[in-house]
Image 1 (cartoon, one colour):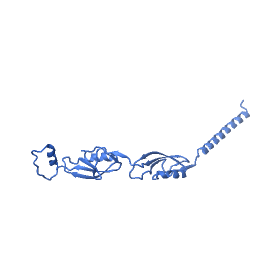
Image 2 (cartoon, helix red, strand yellow):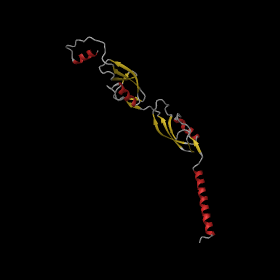
Image 3 (tube, rainbow, N blue to C red):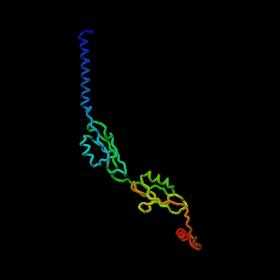
Image 4 (tube, rainbow, N blue to C red):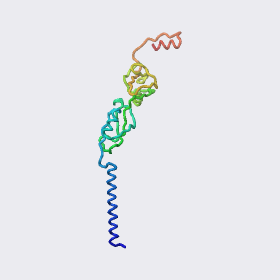
Length: 199
């Protein structure tokens, strides 16, 4: 049974399988463009309108996955990409992009009335607004927020503002050292007396 012809056939079969395996590996190299990779360009800062022609010239594709709002960066510009710049990938690979939003988003002004300055600043900055000037007026509530303004105009709690808007705060500075004469309120209604006391 185990004559020369049998062993020859075994050798031929092993050799044929080995050659088929090598041919399969070669086909995989050709099919997957093995060792034929391209370097990913740096797209950060590129305006979204210029992406089509730029990406096509590099033989890549792209998809915009998300948008963020960053006031310090140009609107519509790429702020992040995957794969990262300088990576080597196959031709026609898709690059996933995050761009800076073209429109400034709006936020609702939080209720910071009667909060301390520190807490109010945290609340305001956490939603993307900026704190501007601090104005102090005599009030028993020292360093508490009494009012809020944008460009000199008083705003309301919950009012819509653009992300990054600068808000000025009016704070209590404590009781003043200034003395005033107590007015004569006898015979006046509560509303009249209140107006005179405040004035």
